[in-house]
Image (cartoon, rainbow, N blue to C red):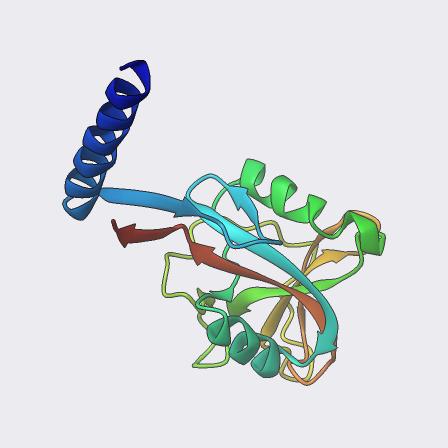
Length: 160
């Protein structure tokens, strides 16, 4: 009798969870290997590529090169480069369309951490690298330079 009761209870619970799941949103979180920082997932890509190839690589994974919006977020993103000695790394900033800095994901360029004298646009440096110099600040760099990169994407949500 106990076995029959437990079996019936399990069937009811499964049926209810299936019905409820059809109408609710469930957060899937970040894909394996990605790191959650606030409402986004980040991935350090150690393979060196030029800025455009790095952006295409991020797009192929459902994201963009990372945008940075606060000092706290910048320091958390920097930690992703720790195992690479905090080396210079591409993020999604560019001023190629006309000298105005923007993020490749379309978000507002509302935080900056430029090194002194930067961005200087030396010989058309149009792409943003982080962890520059001993200060680990931002520098504009030639977009054809091959560097590791950091991708970002929104946390996945799916209809259950």
